[in-house]
Structure formats: C-alpha cells, structure tokens
Amino acid sequence: MFKKDGRSESGITLVATNCELVGDIHFSDQLLVNGIVKGNIYAQAGSKATVTISEKGRVRGEICVPNVIVNGKVFGDIRSDKHIELAAKAEVKGNVFYNLIEMVKGSRVDGSLVHLQDGKQEVAQAKPPKAADKSEDEAVVPAVAAVASPPAQA
Image (cartoon, rainbow, N blue to C red):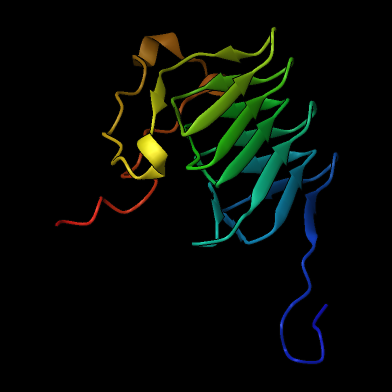
C-alpha cells in the first residue's frame, strides 16, 4: 500500500458489480465502476486520474475527472479537462464539458456538449431538465461551478 519513502503506490479503486456506494469519491489514480455510485466522483487536483464506467456501471452524480471513459450510464454532468471517451453502450443524462471527446456509434448524450478551450474555460451553470421530463431513475443532478479555475488575469 505504501512505499518505504512514505509515498503511496498507484492503484485501481474498484466499485464491484454487486456493490452500491453512497457518497462522494475522491481519488488520484484509477477508478473502475462496475457497480452503482450514488454521489459525485472527484479526482485529486493536478492528477492524471482516469475513471472508467463499465457497461454494468451506474453513476448518479457529477463526475469531475481529467480522463473519463463511459460504457455504462451516468445521471449527472461530466466535467473533464483532458479526454472523454463515450463507448458504444454509454448513456449520459446530463451535460458533458470536455476538452477532447470521442463518441462511438451507439453512445447517447441527453444534454449539452460544451467544449472547454484547453480545459481553462469557466463553465456556466446548466439548466436541469423540466421535472415532468425525468423519472425517478433518470433524475439529473444540477450542474456545479467549474471544471478548472478561471484563466489568470494579465
């Protein structure tokens, strides 16, 4: 778990298939979601973290991670200042804020795609869908502030 010099080893955090995690997740390396996460997912500032939502994975909350791979379902906004990959079975019910995006045929986004210039653009708060349009299983978490700090003033 820890090296002799006190630094932690890199590793993969797993939310297993039959697991439901309620609450926010903060991590710095890799997160693999095969089960259900009911909460927000945040990467440590300055990390090169990657979250992977597998075909059976479900997330109900906001994802703020530099690298995101989705092949399952996300009910909430995704914010990535590096790279997002939406695989063939990906379903996102929320807004996607991205610097670089790959969308495979079959992936779906029910929300807006917002391009971030070099991950530095401040993201405006998005309007959640009308209450009549969402079922209990498809509720969208409202957008939060920004992916990255605002650009430095000259």
